[in-house]
Image 1 (cartoon, rainbow, N blue to C red):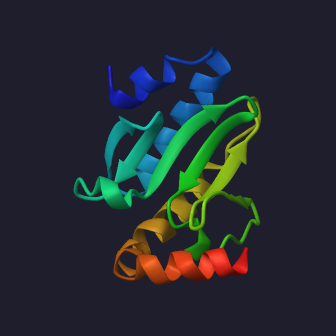
Image 2 (tube, rainbow, N blue to C red):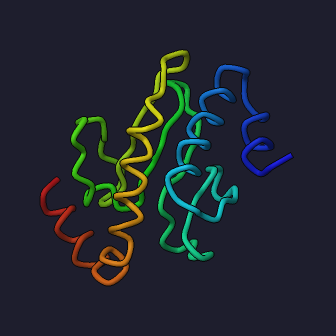
Length: 132
């Protein structure tokens, strides 16, 4: 059983289906390391967990796809909601269709902006807090 399958099977059938669909979309978008950390199914580049790219988790409202530096994403679909200073989350209601191609677009953009975030994390966080 993969890490994603183990994580998914901790949840109800509907939650597991959403987690696995999101996992497939994230995995198809870019080759990433995957592990469960802090209760999330997390994805990063080359084992750099301090600057993880995306995370999947389940809440009472459904499944969530989180981006550590989501404030840098263009968000053409206007689906991201604010979290911490830089984190943004895309919420998915259980039982609704997940547009895996669009999820992939967001993941690819997050990977593309990773180095910029790493180099400027303090300034990005300060600006994001100022704009809240």
